[in-house]
Amino acid sequence: MSALSHRCQLEPKDVMNSEIFSKLHIDVARNSTDDFNLFHDSKKWGRISRNPFAGPIVMGFQLESLVEGKVADFRRELGEERLIAEHGLHFSNYQFTFANAVKPGQHVAVEIKQSQFKLEPEPVLSNRIAVKADGGLALMGFKKETARPLVTGKPDLLGIGEMRIQPDRCFLPNGYFLKRKFMMNSNAKNFLCGSLRDQSEYIDEIQDVVGFPELFPCALLSSALLEKALKWQHDFERNPMVYTSHKISIDRRLLAELRSNDALHILIKPAANCAEHDFGDLRATPLDYECYGLFRADNALLFSAEISLVPLETILQAMAASA
Image 1 (tube, rainbow, N blue to C red):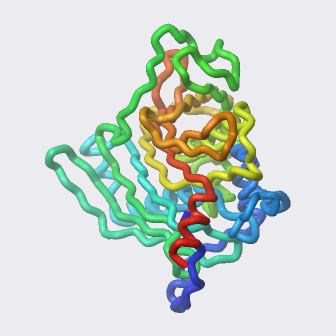
Image 2 (cartoon, rainbow, N blue to C red):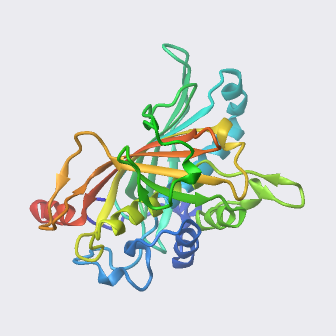
């Protein structure tokens, strides 16, 4: 997240097409994913050293989930679901860069550019996306539908065996930190509500409709990253970290198999040759992580992700330099 933007004057049409997050929306979303980041806590945000945001801010995955819903509506209106099925575009790919924080009460607008479909060298349906808060840029990137994942990494599981027998919150011999989460309908519904989305589109017990939105399993990465940092005794108040970018590929075929109470095994470790920073702690914190979500006895790869973070101190220094 960059320096705080100046509030922009909004046109009437922008206000009419905007969404507004409240503190309650943030609480609902973070509780549904077990996210305990102080930046999203309505009482503890003030404990963060030199916090420039003056209150809780919307979760990154919460904002991306809003984008997911808007793109899904966009696809339905243009009949693009048939195009996706015809070309076997089973993977949803998200790539976003965070430009600024979104705060409760701001008018949030999602701008989706015209769809681009290409057959060569491989079929891909893509849209550029920008999210603005009170007219200022908060998030930018794209959503792409492809036949193969754009985040191509795979975890080396040689000698690990069945993931379900490994202890939760442990470091595996291959260097990955394991966080086990259980998919719950109630949590998914709350995450959708916290993301300003209609939960009945995915889960309606009376109609026997049960499914999970694409970004809900991925949103559990925040909890896993926080748990890993906690294990390494990271100081969340003195050394806060914020997202700079997310790259995510999720297999919609496997997503359709997920049911309530299924175990999701999340693996994370520092990316190869990633940059590091040093706050004077005994252990420096890597900035880039490779992350995976596995389920079923055969450790099927539901999603792959590359998550990048930066110390808040780095942003504050950049703000001071540009002032």
